[in-house]
Length: 139
Image 1: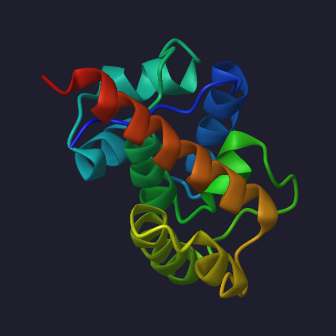
Image 2: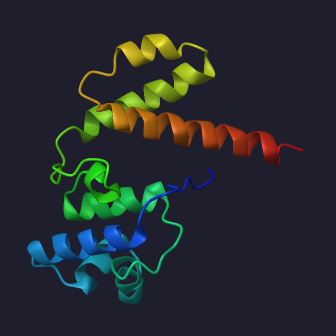
């Protein structure tokens, strides 16, 4: 599976949030690195905003380790910090991907439930980018 990157986000702001939230939880960079299965210098690079292309998967990993809402990390929701609807969002994203593939997007969108609109838009954008990439890379 190809990695999907979030375009148009402020890596420095994400890094600041990662650092603040790590310290708030009284975790060291080394502890976070171990949980993410990366080197401590990798955590340092993310926190400093030096990683230019951050994948959605990596953001999800940081969010899980620090118990954060990914929307908070990317600046989509200034008030959200702790995870509260991650299961709803994951379930909805999977349903939406299947719905798009089966041309049944409307019925899936009607069942969005607790998923905020900005996340729906982000998920749709990521799915469309993935589909575009698949078309480009087909032999």
